[in-house]
Length: 103
Image (cartoon, rainbow, N blue to C red; front, side, top):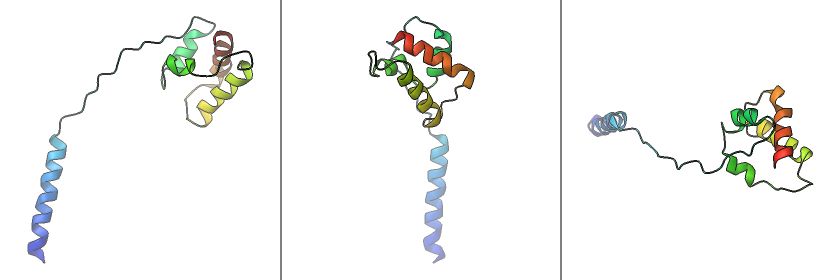
């Protein structure tokens, strides 16, 4: 039984050594093509929202008069509660104000 175990342990050791010597994978991301529109509290939005997604994401959200403050309040709350966005409570109102006024 020991004679069968030794080749297996040798194979595991070789795989472990190979994995530690593997080169890191590098990715080149495409250039950012979207930008946030100018508006109130733009700096707060850029400092919070771009940590997780681009301005393109906001442009894909529904637009129109019925998608204003209540809609954006719900979206920002969802980002915090569902996706764990590390947004300071003091910034929530500023982000909602920006999104409501700008999109």
